[in-house]
View (cartoon, rainbow, N blue to C red):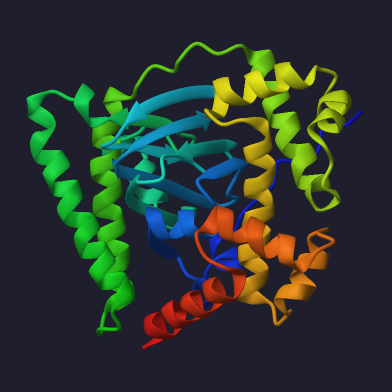
Length: 304
C-alpha cells in the first residue's frame, strides 16, 4: 500500500487569511495552540521556514525521524518540506514565526559563516544546554521577538521593511545558537513509522469515528501496542490524538465557515448535536457557540 502524503500546512491559508501572501507570519504559541490543539500531527511547510520559540512549558518534538523531549526555554527550527510534529503542555507558551524561504536565502550563503549552505537541517536547542557565552545572544533573541510582535501587529510606515530586517536578525541569532543543537532521544524507527501511519489514517478517517481497534487493525498492531507507541512518541494516548484532530477541524469550521453548530456536528460525523456540544466543551472549556463568538471578537480586535 502506498504511503499517504505528509500534509502541507500553509499558515496564511489555514489560520490567518489576512496574511495568505505575506513573507512573514507571527503568532503567539498559545493562540496557535488554541486553534490547532496542543498536539500537531506530522506535517510540513513547503517554501517556508518555521521556528517555535517555547519560552515555558514542556514540549515533545519530532523532527524528520528524530525525537526530542525538553522543558522550555528552547527553540526548534524546521526548514521547508521537513516533516515535523510536536506536543506541548497546556501551559506552554512562546512565539511561532513562519518565513518564506526567499527572505532567508542570503543568510544561508556559506560565506556568511552561519550555515554550510541553503540545505540546512532541522535543529532543536534547549537554553539550559548553552554556556554563559550565549547569554547575550539569548537576551538579544528575546528582545528581537518582542520587537517583531509589536511590529507585526501594528500598521506603521515601513512595516514590511522592518519585519524583513527583524526576521533576518532573529535568524542570525538562531543560526548562531544552533551550533549547540540537542542530541535526539533514542527512538525505534519502526515506532516512528507506525506513529506517522496512525496520524495519516486519522487524517483520512476522523469524520467516520473509527474505533481504535479499527485503526490498530489497519496498521497491523494490537490496540494496546498502538496506545503504547503514541504514549512513547507523543506522550498522549491514541484516543486523545483522534479527538484533537476532530477538535482542530471543529475550530476551523466554527471560525471560517458559515455553517451552524448543528451543521458542523453532522459534517464531523457526530449524530447528536447535544453530544457534539458536550464533546467540544469538554475539550475546549466552552461551548461551540461561545468559542465562535469569542474568536470572532478576537479577529475584529486584531483587524482594528
